Length: 150
Image (tube, rainbow, N blue to C red):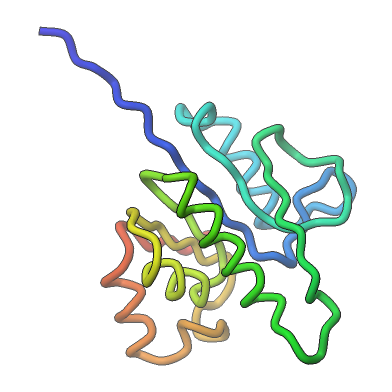
């Protein structure tokens, strides 16, 4: 009996402030690009983020344009989340990885049916969406896996 290997579509979401370029890559971006290069699912993995530069670390990066980056009246985080939700309603993913932004996880799980993984590259107790015990319990109940990167 032969086994059929199912292709898994994966969306990787970086914080919108994380620069995914050769010139200005941050720690989480470097971690994601290295992980992607070694993944057996790299042909079906898309990485989402926001940056002004165009020298992306990998070819599978999709830039989300944001208008509210410097606005004092509108939230860039909310705009980023809404644009991701809009994309994911049409582009279905089997698995969504979220890096360092539990607030994004909270909003996406309300509107997008998928399996989720949450990566923490920094202290979860200092991030919006994971400061309280109830917020952390909510994260645990909504993810397949929590991972603290060191």
